[in-house]
Image 1: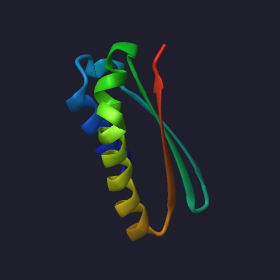
Image 2 (image 1 turned 120 degrees about the horizontal axis):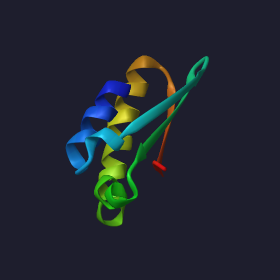
Image 3 (image 1 turned 180 degrees about the vertical axis):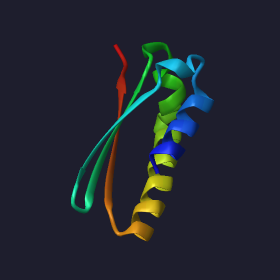
Length: 78
């Protein structure tokens, strides 16, 4: 799941080396934080958040199959 998010994010941004992912897992809850450069935030979020919604939809499909609750946050990487 994390590898998929990393692959999608690196495909979208201009600076793939700035992509970082932090994962915190508690029993059946997974909190994923995707960090990208400030210049690439718009590319990952998309117009009206459509790309971010699509990424979350993919995560939801995977989480239903694995019986997990997943939360994705997108932040600037300092």
